[in-house]
Length: 239
Image (cartoon, rainbow, N blue to C red; front, side):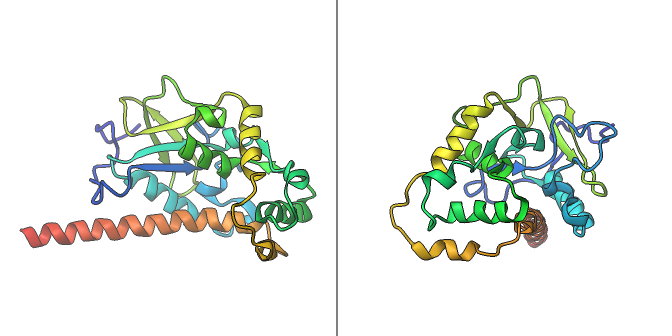
């Protein structure tokens, strides 16, 4: 049970309300991690991939971030169960030149795993954030008022149903439409061609994606701690 009677678990005000208004988070499963499942909390919350070397750091950071997002910031979660329904990137090998950095990234993935294309966890979350859920073949969840919680040890998450808050999560409505929308963007020609751009992806390791996932939450957790410290310092000066 949630010991906090406040429907919004985070009491911290946003110190810069004009700068951060929307936060798209890819991580976890919704409305919760299935009971008894193993290794399903999502790399962004628990870092279980590649042996779980960053598991403790990622779980603690994710829990801190989710619990301390300012109430004025709209938060939209895209869970692992959404991204795994959307396969994208395979069309790049037919539509994009070898100099395409997007093709280079997926080529590296193919060399590492043998897969042509990939599940669309992060791209889907980004597309929802930029163009809205409808354009991404998704919709916002219904009858889901409440907020997200993350276990700081395991990284498992659970949606606490209750009063409406600043938080919600995405549900895939049309996986084919989502895949097409992403591939259409991947295949767009850039306004400025930079043939050397693909070189940076040569020899890239697939673990890079996981490293970015973990470092993003660790960095955001550190930022929130700094913001909280500044707020306490400002309040002390006023007193």
